Length: 207
Image (cartoon, rainbow, N blue to C red; front, side, top):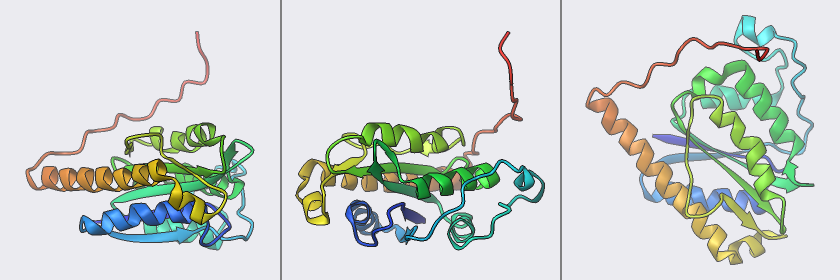
């Protein structure tokens, strides 16, 4: 079992990474393999709604971030997406990456566990979580919650570490993720099939 953790922050070892590292530590203790991927400080192209991915199954832009992330996602069993909070919303880079990843290849995420986390100095985290969590709810994913909203607070990593409730929330995400992965594995071994997904209807009007 492997979980990929994605940091949508340009800061390599910042607050978002600190929160993800706490989840990673808990997953590792439960016997789950992990890898943290960081988006970096380079620009990430936004989706331009060209529709080419519907024909080819991959995004028309072959940049390092989205292409690499999608390649790794295909072989993973669970995911954690983390972002800092900028003016009450996710980082533009992680939002662009998620839009392109899920629009071009959402089938690889279907029926897999996912958690979304946000970090902020003080406020804006609930709006941030609302924005990025929709990528999971629209893709037949299994959202992993915790004992409180999936967020940490702090201006610097050392502040996040002092956020006892936030760090506890991250650990419980890790425990819940590990438990769900093991339940899915046990169900698979017992012959429990994943639910069928109906052909997608796209209603573009309301009568």
